[in-house]
Length: 307
Image (cartoon, rainbow, N blue to C red; front, side, top):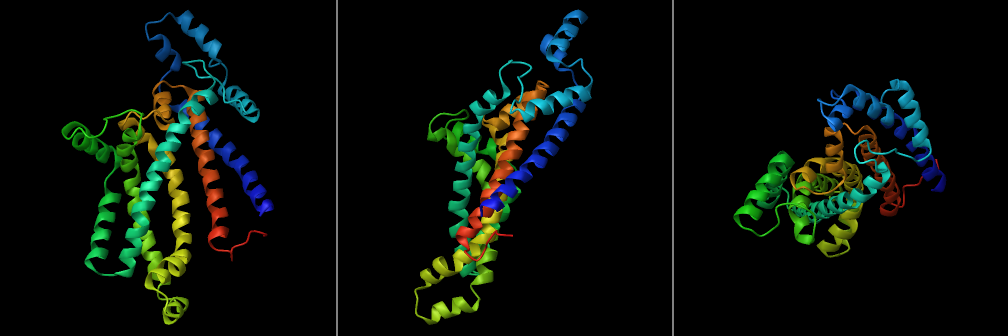
């Protein structure tokens, strides 16, 4: 197990290098000058030149890229062009809010998807099965930028039950978490249903029933455990998607997370901050997938990683 973890962690290095390179050059291709955004177009050319030299933006792009990689190798993500604060400090300030929102959305998705998917599979072609599939299709078809404002209008403005935006108590978390988790709940419901359907017709399930075990024991102890592996795979992949997909939801609900920080940095052409945010999101995605692979062995002891 340990050699496998080490090999997977070593793969993080080329992934981070590739993501860093793409982000660095793509962000410099975006039209707009951060110096003009900071000083205004009417600023004196001498002031612009002085600030550009101070920020190191007057150097050739390859030289900037080399310096960026050198700082990255030292664990230094640089300083924000606008706030002059360390990028890592800004990200660490915002990252807990994104994790809080992501885990809440993931919890809502799992709580909805697993029971509904199991019931739909055990009652195939019933009204419950058809109804759950309709809701799953509806959930995956509604984009966050439409669903979020709809929830705000209904539950915050018309009914006054929940806050419109911001981060505070648990009531601030409900609407953004449901908005972010709905699409994932729909996908997980379909995956759970199809996985359970595949295993409930296996011989060992017939044997369990022939032994006289209760149907709930057969389904939740024998069938669901083996059906969970593809569901766990999907949860791991979707967790990374939730992290990156939180950009839209955080913007709609003014949630102070890393997604909103990324949007603000892109609008201000804050190159170091954009690079840092995307690197952290990419690294989170890689680590989540590693944890997903490790959970496989806990769910299914037949899986080993010696080779």
